[in-house]
Length: 134
Image (cartoon, rainbow, N blue to C red; front, top):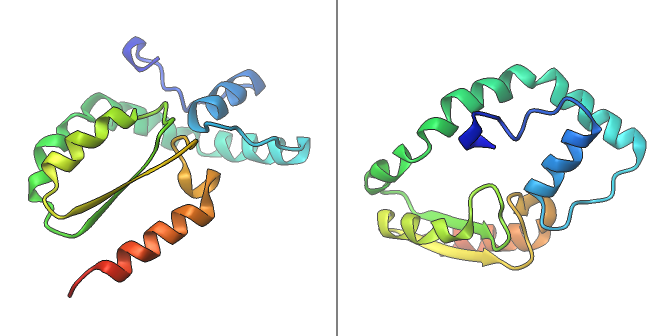
């Protein structure tokens, strides 16, 4: 979609919502109608942000790679093994560029581990923070 100049995060209708959920989650949650309506309303209200993001972030996303060596802070690379937004095959690029990192790949998880696997994500984050030496 991005190669065609389309932003996959812009939602116009329920079909777009289903497509976006399938893109973001390995196992899209089943949402009751009132929640779907609220999510759609929230996305609609933030449409300008997603349009701007698509124009500014997606076309230049590869520029991050050249900046990675400048990051000196300890970094947690936390990735879902079924991420369809940024494939898990991108992890070695981050590992190569970041000298002070820890990598965790969460199984059966998409682009939003904090939503799909909140307990595992929190545990990994807490362990990472505890492991940082001052």
